[in-house]
Length: 166
Image (cartoon, rainbow, N blue to C red; front, side, top):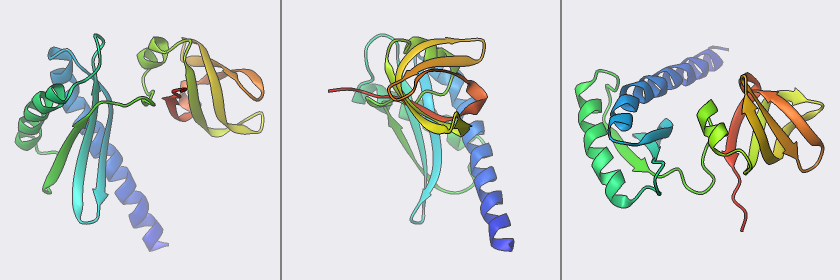
């Protein structure tokens, strides 16, 4: 039971730090013309990694964009008191199957195919794949390829991403 407590405590601490990192870097990203799509704070082997996925509305993110934002973000993170341990900072584009977290992200991708997982089952289903039809009032509407149209509250979404077709 104690091991479970410490595991949960570590998960909560990482979630809080991740949110603090995102809040700290978001205003910088906006000033520079970028959007923070996602932030991850993870431990891999013995190393702490801060991954920041950025995007911009006009065109995609280049290696040069990532280098530039890495310098800005690195300075701000080093000056903050959020991270006590040494870490590696990685800046990247969100990729083709970008994460959808914020309402404005969902609105931007109306008409696109998305994949999402809900916290709890909705009509005995937790995994959805289909076209994003609408996004408003804290809900999305998806035309699931298997079971038709569903309206899902944002609070019920565990994770969601754009599903790129080739």
